[in-house]
Length: 200
Image (cartoon, rainbow, N blue to C red; front, side, top):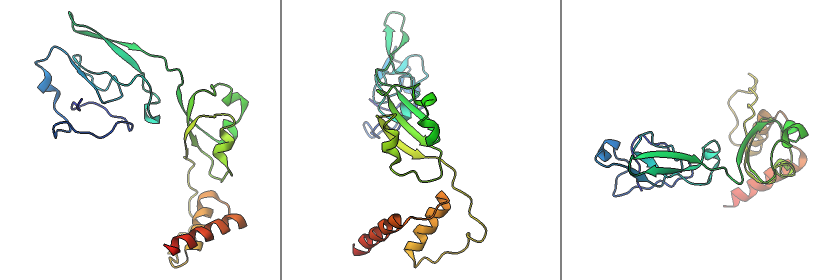
């Protein structure tokens, strides 16, 4: 249950050390016929023929979305490990597209509502309550991120800001990112949030 140098990690593994060693060279294990390791979730994390991680039977995070899960069957006479893939009951799908495309039947009907989803939204404009709207089509959303490019600042806007006015800073930032101005309700939310911060 330690890290063999040269292995690959995912973001769902805890950062542990065994015996104070973060990693050891695989050459230290050359005297063993076969080394079965744990902890790392990727069964193919080690490329050495006689050093293998069992991996996890299911995907624990979005970083493992494209990872093929399975088990190693090892013939102890020939020392020849064979990887047998496992088919997940519920897949993790990473979808990157605009909101309008994601809710189009031609897209969402391709996917099971029982699967898990990581959404990468390409829209640059604000879509109110967007995650709950998407959950009508993809109920099991694990995470939602915006990957839409931030609109470039106009030359006259890219000047030194007045840092003494937090409300204006928030308003300007919102406009630069979304291309829209804060609505009256959004302004009230920001004002209330700033008041709460100033109380602390």
